[in-house]
Image 1 (cartoon, rainbow, N blue to C red):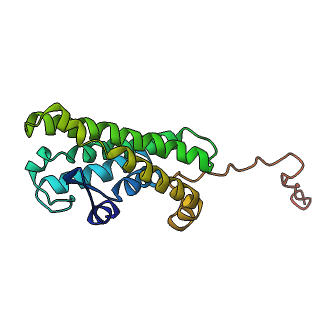
Image 2: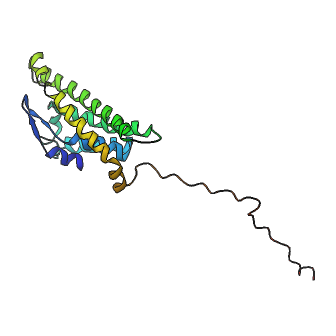
Image 3: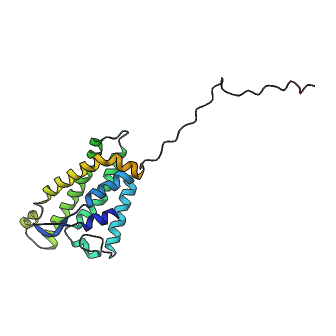
Length: 196
């Protein structure tokens, strides 16, 4: 739901009117950090499938033909980003702001790499623009990447508070019962009256 809400906040990219900057990437990466790699991946897969069957949850609507939109590559990247952020986080035994930002940063990079590659080929091959025009559409993306990275760092600073409100995504550690020492074991004393 937060991925859908993040997509409703649309800021157009001047170089390419059909591509919008949204707050989705922040929510996508948070889904991996909070839900874990598998559930984070499934949440974004559900988002993508809901949009492809026709519900207008994407930034410009929905439907199967949305795969020909240059921005659809970023939706594919959401799957990798959610999984990667959760997977990298699960590799750490202890967490800190820098470790969380490390996870978020590489997840963000995966989203942009997949999205930019998809966008380039759609503009070049499907929309039949020149290679130069395809590269031009990517010109503002480094600036958008920096904005996303800054927003993610702020989220990483707030993560302990968010995790407290939502509840930890990792399963609770079961406490092992301490074995009773010989000195604390209750030994039943024989009943002296039994022989009587």
